Length: 363
Image (cartoon, rainbow, N blue to C red; front, side, top):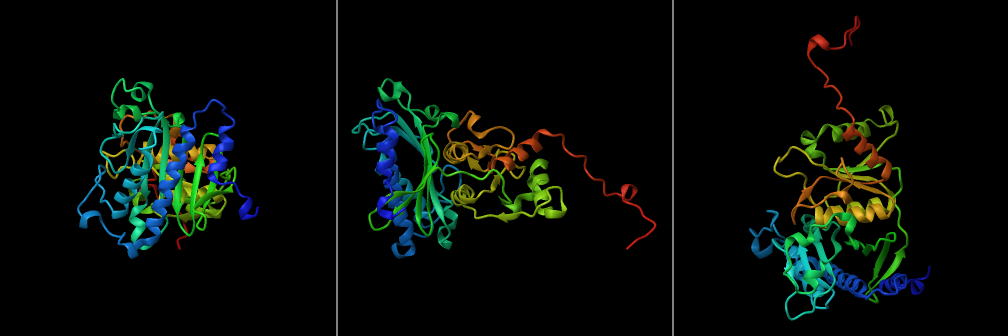
C-alpha cells in the first residue's frame, strides 16, 4: 500500500470506535496520549549521547522500587508518560515500574474512566550500547468510586487480572519506531512516519506462527532452572538428533520488547521462567506492566502466554510490583512447556560406576 494511503493511528481508532457508538472517546484519546509519549521518548532515545541521555540517573546510585539502577532515560521516559497522559481527563491514576506507589491524577485535572500502568523504558540496560529498547503499557478500567471521588485511589485498584485489560501495547525504538497495539480486536502495528510525525498502520492483524525453531532464554541461569525448562532447552539444543527431530536457533537480546516484536513478526518462544536463583523472587519480570500487556498482545495475535504452569492472563495480582515467571510466543511451543510442567519429573540419571553403561568393548 502506498505510504499516503495508509491510515494513521487516529483514523484507525476512529474506525474502531464506530463499532461502539455509545463509547465516550476517552479510550481513543488516552491511546493517542500514550502514542505522543512514545514519540517523545523515541526522540530522546535517538539523540542519545548528543543530548547527554546516556548513563545513570543523578550520576549513579539512584535505584527504583525494584532495587535496579535507574538510567537517565528511565526517569526521563517516566516523566514524559506522566506529563503527557495525566492532564486530559482520561485516567484516574498511573502506576509505573519507576514509582513506588500509584500516582493519582492531580486535583486540578478531571478524572477519567481508566488506569494506566507502564514500563516507561524496557531494556534500558541496552541503551549505552545502542540496542533496541521500548515502552510497554496496559490500560485498565478504573473503579467508579475512584472516578466519582467517593474514595481515593489505592494500589489495590490496579490489581486486576490480565484478562480484564481494556487495551495494551508497546513501542519499540529501533531502526524505525513502531507502536504495536491491541484493543481486544486483534493486534496491529503502526510505524512512525518521521516526516509527518504520525504513526501509520503498516502491519494489520499481526499473528504469531504456531510453530517455531527459535527460542530465547538467558542461558547463564541454566543452573537455577526448574526441570521442565531444562528439559525443554536440552531438547532444543539436541537438534535433529534429539527428541524434537529439528534444529533450533537460540536468541537473547535482554530487551523483552525487542524479543516480543521479533516473535510477533516471525515466531519463537521467550522464556524468563521462575528459578531458584533468588527464592524470594518468584520470577524476574513484573506482572502488571510487563507480563500482562505482552500476554494480552500475544493471545490476541494467536500466540500463548503462561507462567509455565498456568495461563498468564488468569493470574490474580497480589501486589503492584509483583514478579512472575514468564513464557510466551508460538502456541505449540508454549503448550509443550506447560505440558512438561504437569508431567512427572524424569528420574535423575545416576552417574556412579554401579549404574554406568557396560560393554566388553571400550573406546
